[in-house]
Length: 146
Picture 1 (spheres, one colour):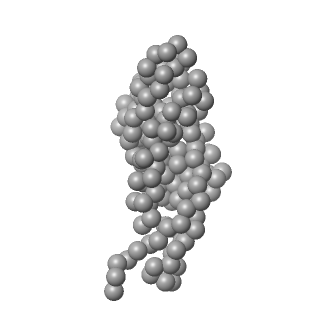
Picture 2 (spheres, one colour; picture 1 turned 90 degrees about the vertical axis):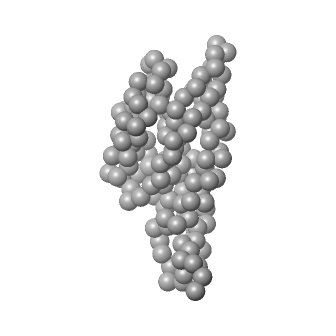
């Protein structure tokens, strides 16, 4: 069920990931001296479902969960973007499951920092897993035409 949940959440939220990648182009950590220079970086995207692993129900509100996640993120990375999403899947007993999800985007973060964030999120939000996606991306910090 864990793998099925992860796969379905990933499929549902893929569009959100694409949109966030475009938005995050302005949040590049490494600036070039050239105004329109491309920068290659690694982006991590973490999907956190909000249903409690023991009850399969959402116990913590979306707003409280988001605040918990933001407090954890700032301990390990200098910047991130958070989005709210929702996902659905069919469990092993053929029940339709719906879940609110928090999606976190980290550009040019250290992988160990992302894993530390995930460890704390799993513990504080009582999750079995979180999904972490790792992509090589190219970004531009565009300052407009002269």
